[in-house]
Image 1 (cartoon, rainbow, N blue to C red):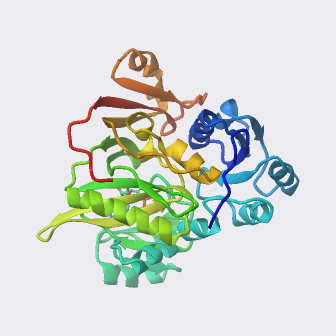
Image 2: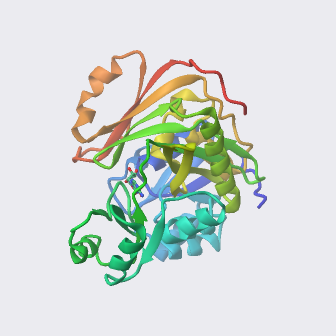
Image 3: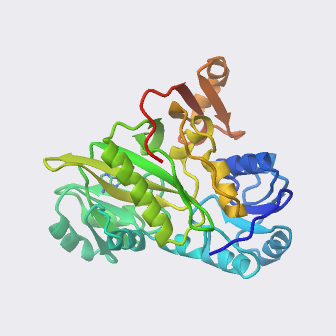
Length: 368
Ligand code: AMP
């Protein structure tokens, strides 16, 4: 796909008004681009920083029509954008990263098959369409295993671990009795991710792989450099680049990976693809020449991609729920860059901001 470059002053529409939309709009502003945020939630953090905003439902065609008349291009900050919304908008302006990326990544079964067909390893998995399929799938994959909804899962929601003796009907009900997949549990040594950008001309730029630590199923820290071999770091970039190319992708995506260590050494399994900027890429705001947000806006605007070169070591820590109340102390620390999302209610589990702890780079830069 060749996409024409949008000049500064152009307007990019963003579907979704959370913190990712907010940071995309801020990065766009640095490039002289305007953003129009479309989100049904009146409390959207991105509204505070946008050139224009529309608060309406994703299936409100009157509002969508008005929105699309005022934008030169559309992107999104979350993967569960309804298909009808994208189809409506894409008939009028380019929507990037595009319909294919959404179709595949909105469904765990499609995504796992897509990744396997590219020749990359995933957890062993089987589709489970009915409660009656579950026992057979467990016989095939063994215990423990994780039952996950095919659609709309995030931060560990819509999934349940099944151990020997567990009530299978209860597990099926717990995920809402809907189309699912069963995955074998991967005995990973570490969770990592790689953020990759692909331009409209097919150019790829990958960031360094990050090491991710979760608490209560929510990302807590992302650290670069990750404690993996140089071979794994290079393999992560290769996986990200291959996936982006196979999706005809334009923009930034993240691939979540499991690092497994066994007698054969260290190798990577693909857990999940996020067709958007990603929480594990927030470190790039303070660790790289061009952040994942600036990079996404460049790609969507049809500009050349910027450098993904990392100049510092970084540990990104999410501020979750009440932790945001520590903002004054954090802001006083010279080694921290504080990013707050402007959300009013600090509900438990809600991502309220993050801090990037910067230190001089200790390792040698990887070959670009
Ligand atoms: P997901 O929503 O699929 O990214 O899963 C959320 C988290 O659950 C992951 O970050 C892992 O910590 C864990 N998890 C998911 N799938 C597996 C698996 N097959 N084996 C081991 N841990 C998993």
